Image (cartoon, rainbow, N blue to C red; front, side, top):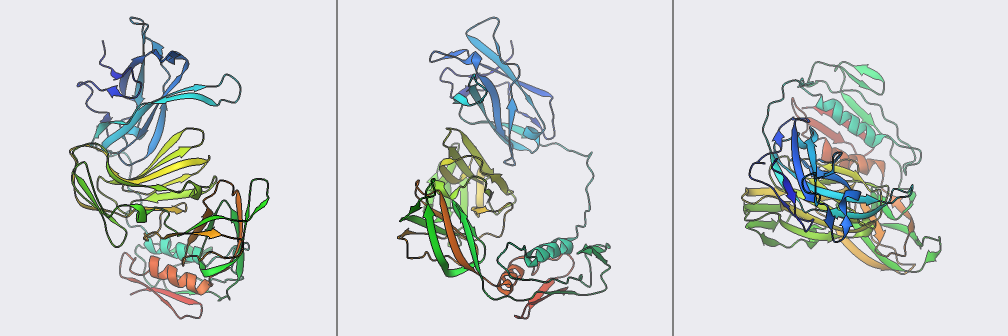
Length: 460
């Protein structure tokens, strides 16, 4: 008889036999079948009427689902059921530990397809060994960093008619020297590197912009710039008051993390710049420091990005997203950022910096936890968070640069706000400082700003 991973009678824990020691090797695909055994009944429920799946997260923090297609009652013992997990490439994409749970769902008999019951085991892991994938060519080893940066600068200066800038004109050429021997195409025109870069933007005066939604994401609004604010319930009836939360771009509540936490042998020390320094050898699973996030900061339809600010190491940033339909998502960013879109109402959220396995040693590993309303990660800033009771007349004070505003109140379904926007010049000036200077491959990319609307970029 095969050695099974046994889902125990409590339907929450599993027993992994000694013979099952690994999930596979990097880039394995559909070659390893892992057998499972579980009880057919639990608390009077016939589990053969449920659908089984494996929810897993590889060593890079990428999540996926394997839908079980061979769940059967054991012919030798009808009180048991068996199934297999055919391990695919996603689960073995990276060396390290792949985490997994077994999830059982029962769906409604009608056409709605609603989940009426669900069981989940706790998290377990199996290692993926290092491999050597040689079939994929390395593409463009000398990447054109200047083209990438120029595209970003162009985007910063391009104005949508619905945006809050009145006018902007961009005339872009290319640097005098390129990091690879290729011409660039900017605004549909090809350049060979013979001209310097000159970006001219017509300055505009400060103008007003309006925004609405359950969460208002204000880009480049100046401090104390809210002109009007109105709150409405789901029936579009105006509300008189509510608690308003205001933050900068980083939604991760670093301010709620303790200054010093010792968890299962690992110390988590919060630094003055908002980073978390992690050191020690874990004596158990899931050593962590954690905090709660306002559920109201998550609006259906918004895209968020979670990042750790690092590219190597064992520690990671995680969100446990609980929804009003009693389902849960685990959003993990270890050594690369993770973007996700909210598709259903959030009931609660826990954020943490943590380490999974027992016996792992980390030495001054530094994490920069950041959550932002964006499709990709941006430079880390320590979070700011404040609240005020909106009384219908007093306006909230917005932090400088990118800000977010929402109401911590179930009654509020929509916020309508009018605010004052910053100028094009200030936006480009800040962008150049944060994203351009010093980011060239061959030589130093230098950007200067004359204060009148002209940005000049060149290689030093």
